Length: 109
Image (cartoon, rainbow, N blue to C red; front, side, top):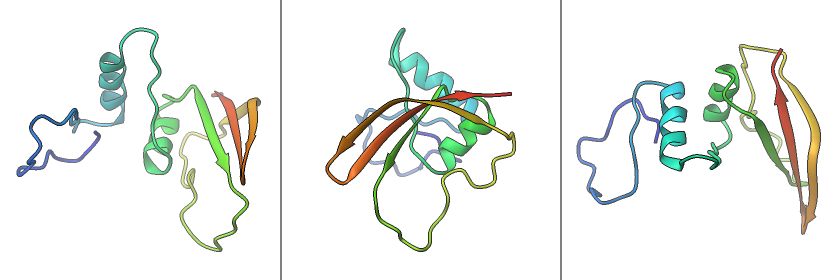
């Protein structure tokens, strides 16, 4: 769990969380160690995904497209610093009920 500081009053000592406070690169490296060889590490959308793209740590971007227009909100990839980032694909596309799942490979310049 990437955070600025470990909660001092964390009441769940046996919870399977590892807190990382020294940046996105360290958090992804630790997650890879915990996952083990040949296992994938995923990150959530929003600022964590943006930080990973800026640090060139993502291999793929998976998008779940839902036909709802909210009219406001925060773009997932707003304020990227290391642009352009090209998405190759889609590598896969599948339809669900009310959702389209898209998977792209990230290509950094």
